[in-house]
Image (tube, rainbow, N blue to C red):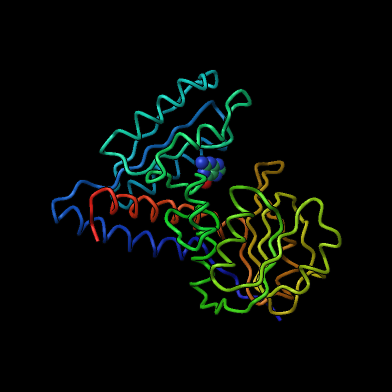
Length: 286
Ligand code: GUN
């Protein structure tokens, strides 16, 4: 079997088109555009590229967007004050503080300071809690992007076995909550898991979010499974590597995402959708 390759770029392009149409109608009805504020701290080249991409997406769909680029030496208090000012800014629906943050900044306290109705990353304890309680509001972008991909291929989730590799706050944990909410039986493997292979081998859906190139070999994959690679590691020559041994695994899987061009573009779609959703709530649009 050779897997069908899930083209995240193409799916995202179509979805950006749908969002742009909605924003056009919205503006024609006399509303202000949805607004996204990004705070970027320091000079991490990868983060600068990600933020540029987010800005470009906003321009393409007609959102208002601003970027506050702060020195790597910004204080905790200054950063929290800036978030609070954006909480009070009525032209802004979504606030995203780009990670990683410098080591002297307490990231949890920064996320706690974001108004949950503007938490378009879906990182706030309130939004994660709502997802855990089966009342999703603003959903974490990468897991939501993965769900959009899985829905796009027409997957019937109920009763499927899912294995997630990695238990991070931003991806692995909310991914498990998403798949559980969709009716899957979920196993999350992490650094203390014994015999990860035997658990992944049972899975109809495999989501790897570890950041270890080549971690997932074809022997771990049940024939026909859907394999979603969230891992992204920048190697020498700036080349990007996923967690999955793509060329070999695609001979076993039923569906597979490439890196790059799989999950990444869908994370950005989820951010746009969340910003639109937040704007609907702030403006009282049904
Ligand atoms: N750094 C890399 N990806 C992301 C993201 O989706 N959100 C935030 N806040 N930081 C990131």
